[in-house]
Amino acid sequence: MSRSRIGSLGRRLSYWLALQSLVGLVVVCAAVYGATHLGFQSRQAEEMVQKQVQLRHLLAEAARDGDVATLKHKLDDFFIGHPDMELALTRASDGSEFYRRSAPSPAIDQRVARFTVPAPAPAQGTLDAVLMLDIRDDAALLRRIGFTLAFAALAGTLLVSAGGFLLVRLGLRPVRDLVDQTRQLAADTLHRRLDGSAQPEELEPLIAQFNELLGRLELAYVQMEGFNADVAHELCTPLATLISSTELALRKARDATELREVLGSNLEELQRVASIVHDMLFLSQADRGVIARRVPTTSLAALALQVCNYHEAALEDAGLALEIVGDASGSFDTPLLQRALSNLVGNATRYAQRGSTVRVEIIQSAPGEVQFQVVNRGTAIEPSHLPRLFDRFYRGDPSRSHADRNHGLGLAIVAAIARMHGGRPMAASSEGISSIGMSLKDGPAKATSPQAGTSSPEHQLS
Image 1 (tube, one colour):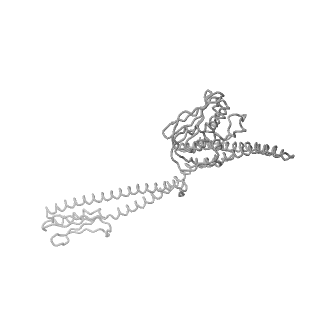
Image 2: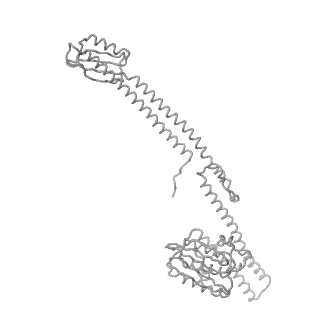
Image 3: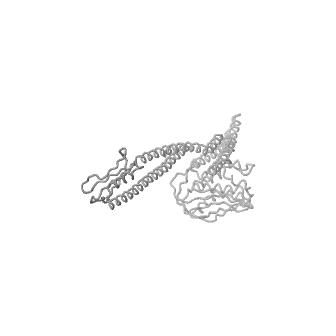
């Protein structure tokens, strides 16, 4: 399934930082603007209340004294120094004007307060008062503040974005350094490791995992080179034998008996080459992830007995006895288990001490898991050899004994069959007792297991 392209991490961080800065500054500037606006409104409302109280006091004195001329004079004095205020007093009875004080220029933005006061004597009734406050200066100042805050928000966003872009680039410099280090890696430099000494702690787990991966790749590459050399060695010997024996047979005339002997010897070498090729094809299919074809198996001990009967002659020649301990059931690939167990018994037969007993153990180690182990007494296996017993063409015996009959793929096939069953190979050796086997996961699966290219029982148990 395809995934959408994410793009540059640095650009994404810079964009998000710029957006966050813009939102943050806009919120702050809006709060400042709102607080200023509310402050102006509060001051204007307070001023209007104070003027209303003073006007009510003057009109109350005039209503008590009955001196209209003095009232108008006091009202004129009241507005000295307040050119931004207007007042209109009209009689409630007939709507006629009693007093008016207008601003020098008409105001567009005003705050208006309407209230009623008693009319001074000798007039009767009440006066309707309209007090107006010119707020144009406050509105203009508020607009200037708004423009200033908007400009500050934009300028601050640009400044923070530029600084954030530089910080992001500096912060991602360790990643670019890692990229430069990985560019220097190649097949012949897998021994190198990424230097994490100058890296931030957030990248240390990634560097550690990558270095472990390099270690595994180096080991796999070394094993592959060794595998290629071993394949060449294993195939070169029988091919050289075939070529030399054929050349000798062709140098002079030979009777049918001699030619039959040469052809028989060549056939043995050809069968050995075919066995190596079949085993390599099997391992190749297993490496591609093919899983076992499982069928219900009622008794693994019965299956082990069939394999042991096949090795009866070899065990007798080696002076060995064999016993089967334990039993289990489940769903497994029976031909593959026969082949794996045959390889394990054959391996124990070659290296067990004469007169000892080879024991096949079948253990139900956990629910849904079975262990096959073949235990024999003989020369202890060095601890350094145990992890590599299941490598292809690996022989712990440097003399390459039994190389004419065994080409070093038997335990590798055991490990492959264990993996095809969801398990793993196992090996242990202590005080002359060696135990080599595999664990298998029980469970249904629908798949085709890789075959060795022949259906003969001898090949299945080789």
